[in-house]
Structure formats: structure tokens, C-alpha cells
Amino acid sequence: MIEEFTINKNYAEIFTEVIADTYKSQNTSQLISRSELLKEINDLNSRIAKARELLLNGDIDGADYKTIKSENEYKINVLEAKLAEAAAVNSKAENIEPILRRAITKLTQLGHNLFKVDYF
Image (tube, rainbow, N blue to C red):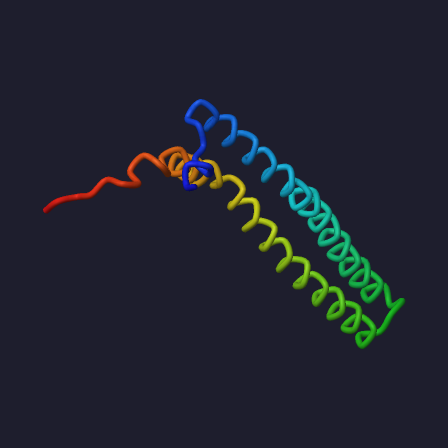
């Protein structure tokens, strides 16, 4: 029954490539969202800068500036946490191939050493 799960060595490379490509394509959305997160962070930093200019020009008072700044800084912190998470996922995607190759190799050898008994 174990031999039913054993992968033919001739197909091991194909399995590796297909699984790696599928994994990477699923994580592409993480890469796209990473660029969107960076854009949002830049937009929020621009809002803080504009609020600072309004404060310096006398168009808003210090309390309004502090409110704008603290709200935007909170949003930036949340987005930076999401950005760090996206970077971790990207790092895992890059390191998947060596792990995948070892796993596929093990699956090609499932039935080979099944009845081998080591004597001391």
C-alpha cells in the first residue's frame, strides 16, 4: 500500500517544479499587496507632512495637528506590521525549493527500504 504513494524518480523534478510554481503563484498576491502597503504608508506620511505645513501656516491649531499625526502614525504602524508579515511570507517562498526537493526525494524512496532490517 505504501508503494501507491511512492513517486516515480522520473517524475520527481516535474512534481518539484509544479508544486514550487503553484506555491509561488499563490504568494504573488502577497508581493502585490506589499507594494500597495508601501504606497499607503507613503500616502499617510504625506498627510502628516501636509498637516505639518498647515500647522506652520496657521491654518490648523496644534491639537488638530496632533490628532492628524497620531491617527496616521497608528495606521502606519499597522501597515508596517502587515509589511513585515508580507516580507516573512516572501522569505518562506524563496526557501521552499530545497525543502520541497528533500520531501520529493523522500517520497521517491518510500517503498525501497520498507523491509530492510539493520543488524547491529
